[in-house]
Length: 316
Image (cartoon, rainbow, N blue to C red; front, top):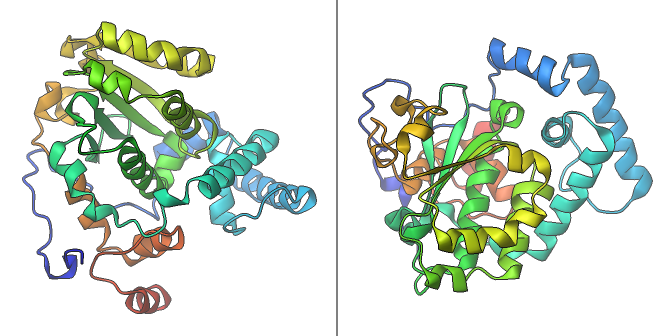
């Protein structure tokens, strides 16, 4: 039986900067982000109304898949990811639902807060604050991954839980996020566990089948082993993704040209304390709307809200 997080105290962390935002903002689009949406994404109220109707009609017309939902809010997530281009948005939705059907084990019955072995190892994390452009940062410390205790599927499960939760935030749908891959400690053991199937799933999540934009990919401590692994990915990456990849080696000052140190943890040469993956998900269980969204995808809520309680709060 999992831990009862309803009996846990709120996560209290030291925040010297004062901009900690572990909870997801499901309602607000700041004015600067709204302007970015208009000029860079092509989003206006008129465009939203028109494209939502066109997308909904196309889904009904073609009948290739059965979407999880057809409400405006859900469809807009996908439209934002493809800058309101109808055919690419439709194809993204087909790919997303196909990926889910083939990989339901990553969703059904999964309690994100109980992936404690990943949290303890600090392999994957999303920082509970935004960097200077308003984007959240997700990082992967691949060298800390022990394949003998944590499977590749465990990593995919944790990654998808983070992305599905993060995608609920309106500004994240518009701005996208920043990824940091730290390969310090990478070994041949890691390389042997990254198969063509693993590569294919990574590409599906990053490129073809998930409605979350990536604005930048930062790679740290790459080595000859990394080069061997990356050679499997490189031919599959579209040009845009190659253009937003930045390779820093061990030079953290190079990373700081893109992300200011005050928006990074100390492990990346920043000034922030370390926050864990688990802390972020525990904080999310405090929001009944987040719980409702995640359980609708198949996740198990381990938090202060039972399905009945969260429905009552949502209604009233």
